[in-house]
Image (cartoon, rainbow, N blue to C red; front, side, top):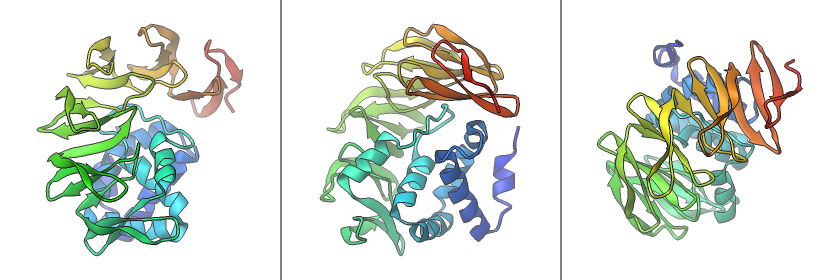
Length: 295
């Protein structure tokens, strides 16, 4: 097991900030195996919320440009716990951020939002801030998280230990060490009960119960029993899951349609998924046939 925490926290601040930016951008650009990023991500996210490092990261991102910053922030902030992360070329949160046209920025020790011209649209007033998704953005006031709209109005009062961006009308929130989901009125529609969880995609979300991962629907009903070591979000009807040291794919009935055999695996896009065999990467189709040999 990679000792990410001791390794990363031994790096000087400027190098740590650059490390965070590189890993986030490189992951979205598919420059290294996703499995590596999944090992580092929990520690990266923890470091990102340390204000000094986060400020250094944002400085670097602003130098790279707003577009790169949107990708990096979304990759570092998305997901909680250990679900398999599906980093598409553009996540739904990224697309929503572009639609709203606002990006979080830190000024002094407060966070606000700027537009693509760099104009401050929502004045710095929050202790933390995340990108917009589905017209709302999670913000932290004191030690609690709520949601604002694009005018900066608090539409869901701060009440969670941590809140994630909305996907498919629901947002993953944390309180007391448990995860649940709220709707856009702030109502807890799926009670805080999971040890970890991921966002909804194609009507299902991965959740962790004890030491195993399964899937729930939007009513909070477990539709695929917890049985996997890790689980990703669905894409094109299939989701990556890990059993032991190998990864395969299940359908929405929970049937293993592509047996666990890969060292790492990505989501499906346009009928193909990138998979790792040994030190090489190739592509499979939805039947599990290797259509582009590992190279």
